[in-house]
Amino acid sequence: MILEALNRLVKSNNNVHLLLVGNITNVNYYELLKEYISLNGLSKHITLITNLQPNSTELINCYLNSNAFVLASTHEPFGIVALEAWASKLPLIISDVCGICNSIINKKTALIFKNNSIEPLFNSMLTVFKNKDLRNNLIIHASQLVKNYDEKII
Image 1 (cartoon, rainbow, N blue to C red):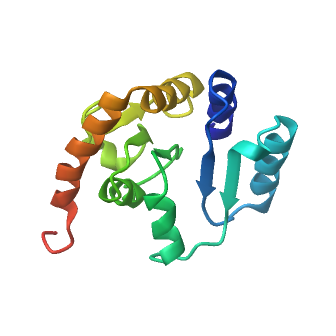
Image 2: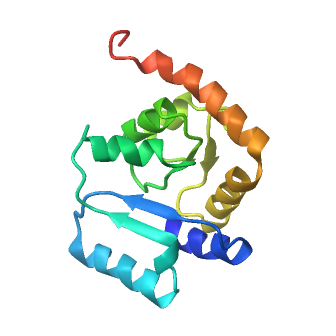
């Protein structure tokens, strides 16, 4: 879904780049992603990183060098990466199946889109890309909310 949204986003603005990070757990799915990227001419708009270790400097740098974070999981009991995104001052775009959505106020601490729905995902990505005020407000409110999840408090 993210690749489909990226493909549409690139058509409206060629200055878009996606950093897709995650360990390969299904080789066939990974090959499908690479094929989609190739067939749609997205190679110059995407970087795939598949071998990062938790808490590594490289992973932290991925967060710190990004402009937004998309969690398009189709099943996610909680979504700890959402907290990591907030702690890294990134606006969050998240699927409504993630457990942390129970703590999110849509359009205040994140943009929530309906699971498996390309149009709402694309619109959320486009909004964060174009609307600087909303992006900044998401960051401000989420930066406060993420403090509630500090392990010292929990």
